[in-house]
Each structure stands twice: as structure tokens, then as C-alpha cells.
Length: 355
Ligand code: PLP
Image 1: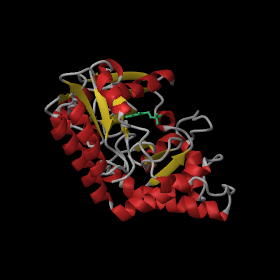
Image 2 (image 1 turned 60 degrees about the horizontal axis):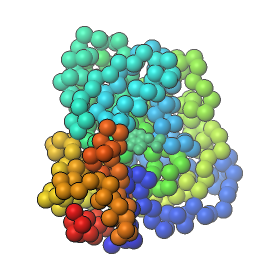
Image 3 (image 1 turned 30 degrees about the horizontal axis):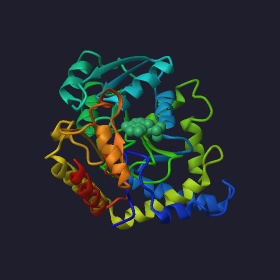
Image 4 (image 1 turned 45 degrees about the vertical axis):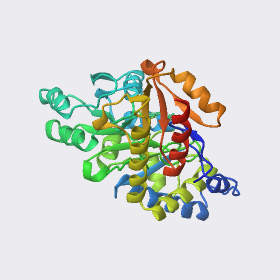
């Protein structure tokens, strides 16, 4: 068991070894040492995303790269699949960029139905530049079937790009960028990768880069073509957060040692423990068929979410609050990153006693 007592759905608890990496000396980001570090990071990111295409690292939170995904691939219309507060964010970003955005939406707690997406796209072939999907909806604890949804887009509207928010799934739930035919997939590092917040990562397809070439105004900071040019040279377009790069390189090495299969199995086991052991006193708010391996939103049966969280806080454990329209009725347990099944069991023991 580790020293983890922190169970919000991001940022997650960070191992001391990772924090230690962040105190290493500075280096120039055009130096040979940086090129080595960057090359190591890209080599670790590609299997994590399941891609042989490009992987970029940007100094910003996940939202920055979500915005970048749209800036670089969409000039007209986008379709957003909405199943909670974070998937709604794609819609807000699209609107703020002046894009015409439509949405298909399901009630909170449910996953996007591939048939709904197919029906919506069937009569709109070529209408949308992109379809935006959220892999793991952190506000509700629902995981969407990205493989099925991306397949629908490919079948119904083959020229439409598929953009995926994997902010709270990457590192805890498998992503298969190439097999699923994705075009941009974005993640923050403070969730499944268990680093302090501050950088974000993305896989970007050749198709997305070809598309970016046709977008006349891509801005400077988030221009994917600049990222590509510098990545080919072992660097990034502007000064990166070097402490995070050190930490990411170490974390990717450690994840490869754990093996991705073992890591995903650990996340599945943590989810199962949370659902099973809270069931006498809390209802899982998400459709159990799509329950997330990294976060659970729970509706307590006998106490208020606030009371539960504050009792846990007194005992040294931090749990997440409800989010958006579920703020008053749920609390959330983040079970992602580097925490162990024992950490979760230890927390659930105490939670069971006060619930
Ligand atoms: N998308 C999802 C699914 C999230 O859970 C979050 C944050 O919790 C975001 C996007 C925003 O990410 P960031 O805070 O790294 O910008």
C-alpha cells in the first residue's frame, strides 16, 4: 500500500519518485539532452495511445489541446456528442472559435449510443468537419465506446475527422488510436498518468496534419504543423515545462515496466471494489454497463454527499465532490493513476464505517 489518501478524479496523488524527477537541473530545449528526453517520451507515448503516428506534448492543461484539436481541423461545422459536463466543453470551445456546432445528447449517466450517431450522420454525409467524442465523462463516471462511435463516423461520413477527449481515460483505460481510426486524441497528465497538472499530450493522425495545412489561421501556440516540425527535430515549438517533461519520461518508463495490460487490469479491479463495497449505502449514478474504470459518481442513500466527504476529510481522506447538475446529489471517487487496489480498499474500509 502507498501513502495515497487522495481520491478526487484529478489531479491525482503523485508518487514521491515522480515529484523527485521534477527537481532535476534545467537544460536548453534545443539541446542534445532535451532531444534524448523528448525522444524517450515520444517512444513511451506511442504505445500508450496505440499509434505509430505523431505524439505531441504541450505545456498547457488538457483544455489547451482540445482547443488545438478544433483549431487545426475544423473551419465550418462540428458535431459534439454530449453526455455530461466535460463533453459539453467541446461544444463551448467550438462556439468560442466561431464554428457552427450541433450536438447529440443523452441524459447524464448514459453513454452515447452509436445508433443515434449513425442516424444523425446518415443524412449528413460530409456535413461536419469533425465529430467530437469524450472517451471518459468525468462528471458522470461513464466510458463511451469510442471504437464503435469512431467506426460509425468512418462508415457514415468518411471525410469527417474524429477528435477524442481522453483526458480522464489515458493511462487507466485502453486507447487504440490507430485501430479505432482516430484523428486527434488528447489527454491531461494529472489523471491516469498521475503527474502534477501542467502539460498535456496528444496523438495526431496524418489525416489531421493534412487537414491543418488547409486551415489558414491556426494561431501560433497551438499550431500542429509547428509541433510536427519541431517534433521531427526532437523538440517543441516554445519553452516547455521541463520539470514535467522529466516526470513524464520517468512515468512512461515505469508504466512500461508495470505493463499496460496490468495497469488496465488494476484500474478494472479498483472500479469493481468501489462499486461492490459502496453498494450497501450508495447507488452508482452511471449506467453500470458503461461504468468507468477511473472514476465513480455515487449517490449516497443515508447521508448527504457533503457530510460523507467532510467525515472522510476528518479521517485524512479526500474524496471528490459531485459535478454540475449532480453537484448536490453525488460525490465522486477517483480510482486512477498510481494508487493501488490496497489504497482503495483501505479508503473503502473507512468509508463503509461512516456511511
Ligand atoms: N475533459 C475531461 C473529460 C475532464 O475530466 C477534464 C478535467 O477534469 C477536462 C476535459 C479539462 O481538462 P484540464 O483541466 O486538464 O484542462
